[in-house]
Image (cartoon, rainbow, N blue to C red; front, side, top):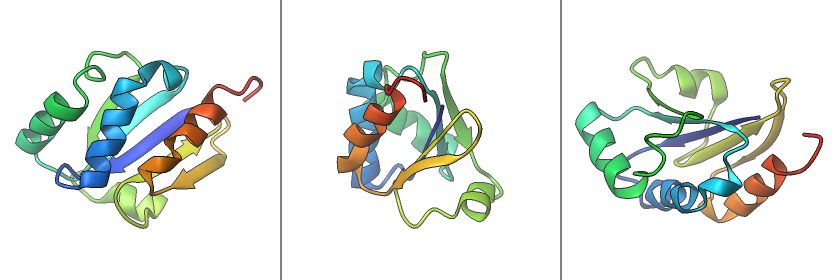
Length: 114
């Protein structure tokens, strides 16, 4: 499964989202996790050190800096954070922009047969 989180380092909801995934990594580890931002390297490093320090070293976590705003154009996030879960066949399973919905994402990730 593909799990995308589009975030901004100054967004409090994004901070809580990444912190939740960081603290509950075991619930998300079965997915390929992509963290996407428009931020500069300095802000990303500060943000990840504070909210996602355990995620940095995980093999299934990729941090992407979107210099060309391609994620917005291709995925159409409504606001920060935008959280997407796709099946292995690239079908959208779940989308939300509220960190309170993260348990729904982890439940989907851990549902057998997905």
